Length: 107
Image (cartoon, rainbow, N blue to C red; front, top):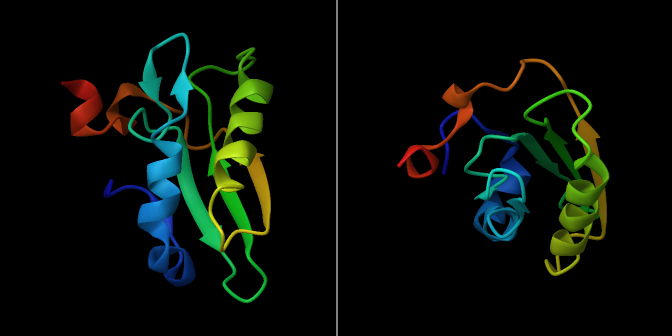
């Protein structure tokens, strides 16, 4: 798991499942998955009702892939039985840099 990502305690319980799904979503321009690319900033999961919020950014403002990646996150999370609803929030702070990439992505 990346050290810089925030995951609430409830999300930590199913965090591996969530991350596994996010690692299957690739940024088609860079050809890396959005998790290791460092686009996912925070995951919040409410275990009582299954609502999940994911804060993510994009490599550049105005990136034309925002809708595509958001749709793919919704599709991927629908495969996790504990998740009933997903909200993807685009955030711009802190700005994405290559420093956000995991060691795996840098290799």
